[in-house]
Length: 247
Image (cartoon, rainbow, N blue to C red):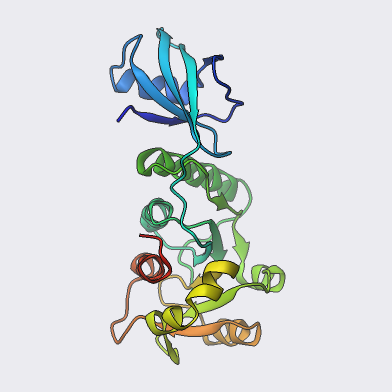
């Protein structure tokens, strides 16, 4: 398969495009040469076959070919509201969530979040995560970028979160099994989408859990084992893919 590159630009068959600097660096790392085939996509749907027309030290030009309308999206939409995790856990989690087909990611500043982000630091981390989203789409074959919302406090997000679709809270104190609920509500969840709320290390605080339940979130469980925050959301996404038809 030709290497895939995301470009934040208009794409059209038979056009010639100066590739952005990030893509030029990647082309050089891969030691591609003029005439080599590549694939371009801009997140608006489908992809374009292309070929490298010129490669310089700081510049590369692509000639765009035909459009391919094929998509790799799941037949349902999941928004992952994830409590901020420390170290490189959040990076890993975002990358893998994109691979598993997540439609949107909402990083949350929760009471027990080890990481505290605000101001310039939050903006830099947002840009870093956006680059991870784009790279993950390049790797896994998705042509539509999942949305990545700015970091929000748990309280602010909960007050503004859409009330449509299934609202699920992953909790060790949950009363329902995620696989059982997903099987019972398969058609509804496929049609209306799912919002999945996962706490940071240490989970959500009792007050946060109670607030989520008052807002209509249903507690769900994946079994008797306590999963780390970087595992929990991904396990839920995999479960939903298996039951709702994403695989």
